[in-house]
Length: 125
Image (cartoon, one colour):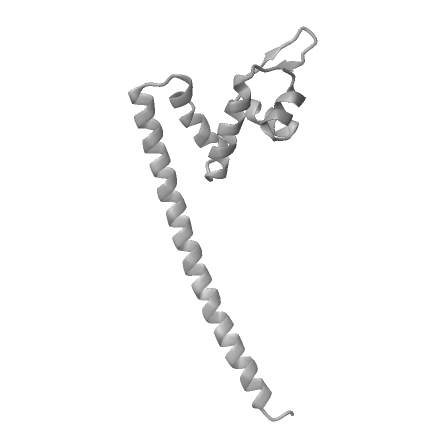
């Protein structure tokens, strides 16, 4: 199938398919006129790549995980599990940082409201 059909069947843009190829996540064969051609297996691969992106993984990390799919083995599986655990830890740290930032903002909102209330009772002048 050509790139437009793959994009349509996988529910992504043609631009995304091209990006996946540029990043080494997806491969195609080329016709004599240079058009990309894909197999039906690529539809599921694109869906899998989409799930990995939805999980917050970068294309560089996804490339590290693909050997588990392309060449299944205990070693590749162990490597993929370890890499996903690292990414989960990274995301957890980021979430903790965001919660702390939100808490600081909440405190500033309380202070600003108190200041605003004080302004309403202060004499004009």
